[in-house]
Length: 168
Ligand code: CA2
Image 1 (cartoon, rainbow, N blue to C red):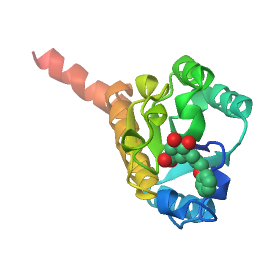
Image 2: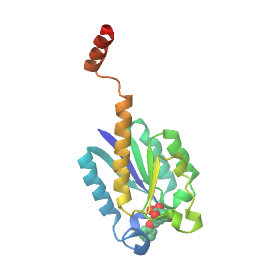
Image 3: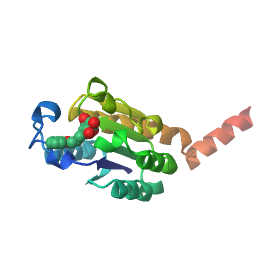
Image 4: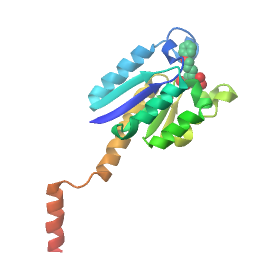
């Protein structure tokens, strides 16, 4: 079973309560339960966490290690400031999709640069809560396709390949 870690950065726990014109009316809880429903459909084991602390996010990324097939992260304000989160993602080498509810490229200039983008598989920005669901579908497809390529052939396929090469 695929295991995917979802990380929400600082202040995203306030979603739906303030700044609704920018971030919409959905709460983080609602976003998480939509993610859980899709994960069930895709047979993915999701671990969803939120933190206001940079160090905690870095620890969770480091701990993800080899048991995690993908990471979906909205680093929130740390997107624009955190070399530590970028370095942790690069260090673990787990395929990571960066998500933003708002389109960071259409907002204040200080939000245009993401430290995470350079080490991410991709970035989804401006599609609201759907961005998380698209990230999950995209990551699922990416990891599944990669597993098919790298998975060693089964015993049956090895036997078939051997008899094929004997026949020449
Ligand atoms: O658009 C996004 O998802 C952001 O990552 C959200 C961050 C912001 O710093 C990034 O530039 C773009 C802010 C998250 C704060 O969310 C709040 C939600 C409700 C009320 C206040 C803040």
